[in-house]
Length: 141
Image 1 (cartoon, one colour):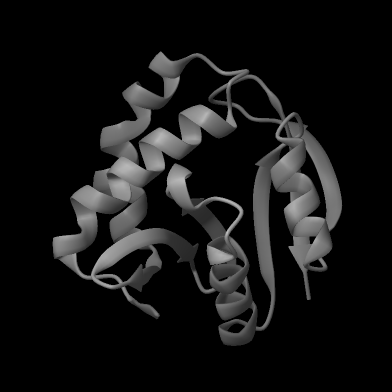
Image 2: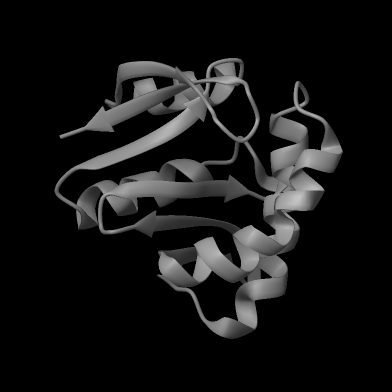
């Protein structure tokens, strides 16, 4: 079931974010993500509309959308990746918002393919200012 994020979900989604972002971005030092933790928790999550995928009381993933158009986060607990949780979350967001954009690291080929398979197109390649790594800006109308 997908539902709106509640404050009580914060620690769990941050745990999911940290574990899965380190796993999915092994080309970036683990310390970079650890240093980003407080900013994600205290700035980005509060500014976004966040939805969690919960089953039997267990949060398996979440998606955060900023300004009703930019996917700032889509993360699935590492134990549930490849089970359809991410697809359900992205489909939920596609159904809720008219157009969506996101940034994804070029080297995260699995994520790039995931978004392309859902109709997102690469519209720009640029350098992420914080990490120094190349990323794609992708869009779905």
